[in-house]
Length: 280
Length: 280
Image (cartoon, rainbow over all chains, first blue to last red; front, side, top):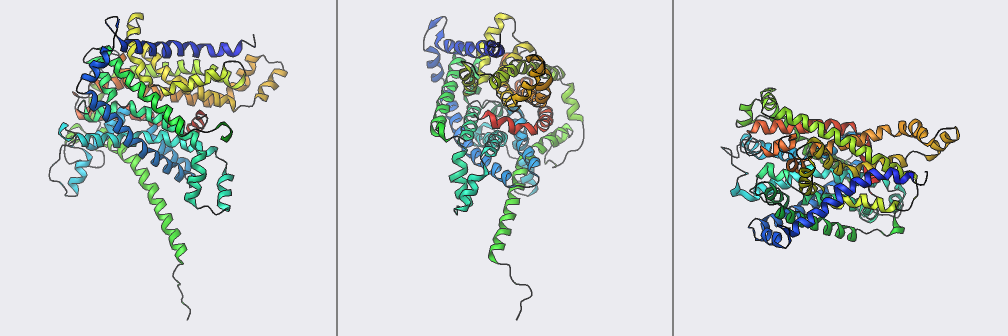
C-alpha cells in the first residue's frame, strides 16, 4: 500500500491530463490534417490561401516582438524598484500586481474607454485645447492606431505577471553575491547586469515563456479594441470555428499557434540555459 | 569669512536628485497601473448619457443608471451566475486533483516522479485555450456541450498545472518531521495529514483555489467557443461586442474587474511565494 500511495495520489491528475490535454491535442493534429475523413493538407492550403492569413500571422508576430521586450524592461524596473524600497513595499507590490487579476477582455474594455471617440484621450486633448472635436481613433482606416492601442493594453495588462515572477526570483538570490560585488567596487549597474541578471535566468525563462505564449494567444483585447479589423491568429481561429463553421481550418490555425509556441519556448530555454551545477 | 550656508556638495545634490527621480518614477508607474482602471470605473458609475457624451469628466457622476441598465439587460444575470458556477466548479476540480498530486510530489520519492513533474511544467508550453476546439466536438458526443460542467472541465485543465505546482511548494514548506511526530504518537498517515498538515497548508490551498477561480472567471476564448445558451459573462460580453452600447460594455468590464481586484488583494501574500517555486 505505501508504495502504491504516491501513484494513487497522482492518478486523478494524470487521468485528467490524459483526457483533457493529450487526447484533445491529438484530435487537433488529426483534425487539421483531415478533411471529410481523408488525410490531406487541404486545410493548410485553405488557411494560407485566405487573404487574412498573412496579416493575422504578421500582426501577431509584430505584436509579440514589440510588447514582450518592453514588458521585460518594465518588469525588471518594477522589480528592482520594489527591491530597493524599505517602506510601503507590500502596498506597491499589490498595486503593481493588480493587472494580474484582470481578464484580457476587461483590459481591452478599459483601453476602449480611453481610445473610443468620446473617450478619455479625446476629452483630455480637448480640455487642453489641442483638438476641437473628437477624432475617431479606432476606425479601420487607422490600423496603426488600433495596433498601438492593442500594444498599450497588452503592456498594461500582462507586465504584472512577469514582474511577479521576477520579484519572486530576485527573492531567491542570496544578498551576499551582490554585496561581494560591491566590495570589489562594482557599480549598481554592473551589479545588476553581472550578478542579478545571470542569477535570474531561471525566472526569466519562466517569465518569457509564459508571456510569449500569452502574446501568441492575444484575442479578447484585439476584439474589444478593433473588432475583426485587426486580424490576429487567435481571432482568425475563432472566426473559422464560429462564423465560417470550418473546424478543419480552425484546427490548422491552432497548429500554427501551437508550432510558434513550442518553437519559441525552445528558443527561450536554449538562450537562457542554466547548467545544472550553476543553480542556486 | 565664514559662509553661513555653504552650497551643498555636488555628491549630496546628485543623491537628492536621484531620490527625486526614483520617487517620481514610482509615482509614474503607480499612475500607469491605476489611472486606466479609474477611467473604467468613472464610466461604469456615470449615467449612460454621460458615458456617450463629450467631453468627459475625470470623475464619476455616481449615477447607477449604467449599472442598472447592464443588470437588466437580457441575459446578463444569467451570464453572471454562470460565470460564478463555472469558476467555483473549476476551483473545486483543480484543487481536488491538484492537491493530492502536489502532496505526492513533495513527500515521496518514486520512479516516474520527475516524469510527472516535467509533464505538468510542459503543459505550460502549450496554448491551452485552444483545447476548446477539439473538446467542442467531444462534448457534443458526450452531451457536455454548452454546459457549465463542460466549460469547468476545460478551465480546470488551465488551472491544474498551477494547482499542482503551488500545492507542491506549499507541502514542501511544511517540515516532514511534524508528520513523523504525529505517526510516532499513534496517528495513521491520514490522521496525521488531516490533523497536522492540513491546518498548516489550508491558507495556501485557499489562495491557490482563489487563483483557480480567477483563471476561470477571466477566461474568454474557451468560454466563447464552448457555450452558446449558457454563456459566461466573458463570453456574453465578447459576443455582444459589436452590438452592445458603450455603457453596457463599460459596466460589464467593471463587473469583470471587481472580483478580480478583491481576490488578488486576498491572496497578495501568496502571489510571490507561488511564483517563486513555480520557477523550477
